[in-house]
Image (cartoon, rainbow, N blue to C red; front, side, top):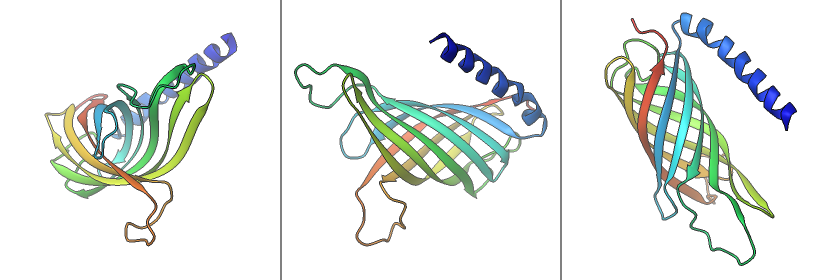
Length: 186
């Protein structure tokens, strides 16, 4: 356990050591708390995302979510270890306006494509599923350091075009929240 803790601390220092040179290059880093609402039932989830943008037109985003409550049936004798969770890695690109970057952001729309994993954990078993997701969003800046955003995300088990036949099962969710930009503002 101690070895795991030391390696986590070392990795955190390595990542944070490279944050300042990245910000000096006029790139942007933001952290975004969010709330996700599934379109067809399910439970509400809270999440946190880290977005790294090198330009006003493209960014990479990593996010994770955890359900607020469990909606699955409780089986006698089974201990729930964690509520259902999801993790995503997305490529984000501007469709209109300037949604990304450290300066001159405007009200804008963006699209994204990503891959992820979702899981339900119990004391006895972990059910993990891979998924692909895509979607669109809109962003409204609130001054230099914060934005409001809302996005629709579609998840599917296979990467296919939206017009593919037969379609793999899809789920849809609405995610909204705020983004807080890190680093100096000009």
